[in-house]
Image (cartoon, rainbow, N blue to C red; front, side, top):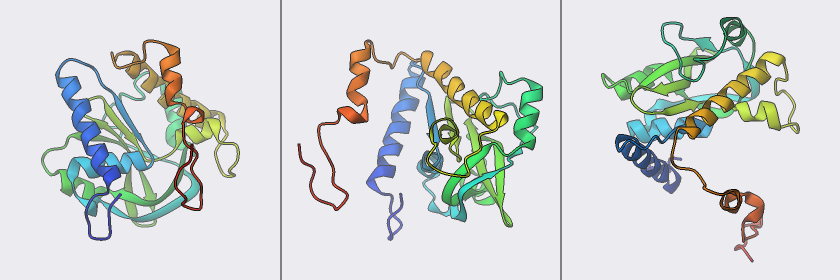
Length: 216
């Protein structure tokens, strides 16, 4: 996401444009939710702060952990979660990570300064580092999670992914929440056949791992 010279890559610049578009739509009364998962969590905060120093080395690959929750705030993501279930999320290993870097807490606070556009919902720890792992935007329907809830439900190739009842429900809560958010938006396909155009198995090109140009 960041070049060796410190400049943002084309990928990150595209994220900046996407966020600007989503905010513009929302300000124009067109609800436009955004969910950043894994690297998307990092990309959104890099695009918002334009500060590469928020990212630090904090490898947590193919690992689960117990999240530290901020009990002083109410997360919109988990606003319908029953208290007993939420307690399980707070005490069990429900978050699955595959990362090499994280957004460090003090750097996050310094980058945003007094303009705290995002509420910190959860943190996680790697050694002495405290990392930001779940955030809600204060003024927009923008949400970020540093872990990979989708892998709990759909990835059966890798070991170490939690399969407990709490972990599955945690992943479902995030997925169902964002589906509800999307149903509040006018930005959707008006027919299923248009949605299928975006499916990966409908792409027109085949890409080779050896770096050759795509062929039809």
